[in-house]
Image (cartoon, rainbow, N blue to C red; front, side, top):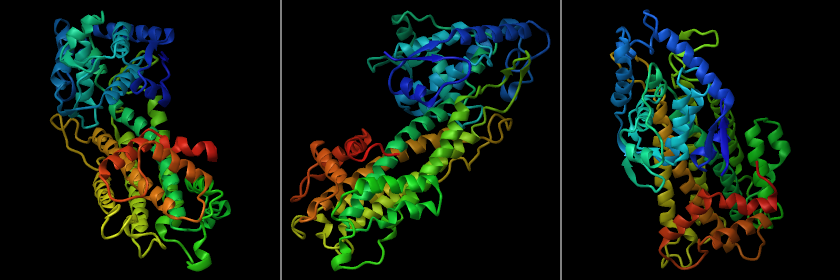
Length: 512
């Protein structure tokens, strides 16, 4: 099995995906173990001094003014984990929890947290055993990091609370650790706080959303091209020279993708022979501009994610010169903003896809296609209600685009008086990505049927490859009305698995 080695300088997005989704094993580098040991020596030296040091020999947050005596410090670290493991609501997905744990381990291995090497190794052991702590939907305000979610993970390291085993069964964490020969950790000075204080959950969800959106944006370029073809639109608006004079990089990429899909089509521009149109509708003509702006937003989001992946987020932190200093680096604002940006562009991409679908179904605007792409309109309703479903999804996407990061609810007796809500931004983005997948799948369903109904003209080779692949995936073509939900579910699964991009790229070459 593939292994990911964690050092002191952070990890990559591909490392996160490998651990969270691919089940890759985690190893600590020798450099990381040495850095952990060196930082721990500093923390233990400070713990031995009479002067209070925040996070080492004091309480936390609004209780930081109390100096904790040595005999109570182990209890303090246990208590912070137990009391902060206060999440509620549905369980968070396994891949999110694995990303959360792995990214916390990444920061621990930076040598900036003062955690012992043995604790870091236990974190790796839990990941490698396939043990997943039960983490709940609600409990993080995205400031002092994702406190409740990370606390539930730390509770598992202590052998307390519940976790899911590699067999998918939820059991007491202590039983699972024992079965895999993992000793529960007994936390010492600063370690409880260090395990809780990071933006790891929101960052993990950002990285996974970016991976999913990368495939979805390529898929949306393909479905936009299929819709253009089915509507007998013109591909002249995709010419590189037109996009070069407005040099937004993403716009040029989307236009190039669409042009590659449409290469060799006999349908594009055909309307000019017998039903002249000066211009196609915005949803067709401006597809590259809308999808391109989303792509450029993703570039910025990746920049933020990469910076965060290289960060050591904790409070206090152990600096190279031996100082242990309090800071505000745990604030989730940088990550929260881009999570909200992505929810906005996903909503707009879904909106323009729905407009193209509606145009395909409207006999007054589809340039000769049957009403609702029905086999026998009136007897058959065709894809009428598929568009209703798509419209409902788009409406939900617009609600999900309302930014979470514009909100703040003060906490901890006004000590934490401005919070990021980054976890909430990440959770709604995950829902938005799911919904966008369904929206693109419905456009694919309608566009492939519409292209097949254009008899007498040959679609582009890439279009034919897409249609063949989606039919092979169990999505039926034109014909009388049938139970539609299974077809839509098959189209959704096809897009979600990257099947559309995989079907087209052997013809077009790699899409960007």
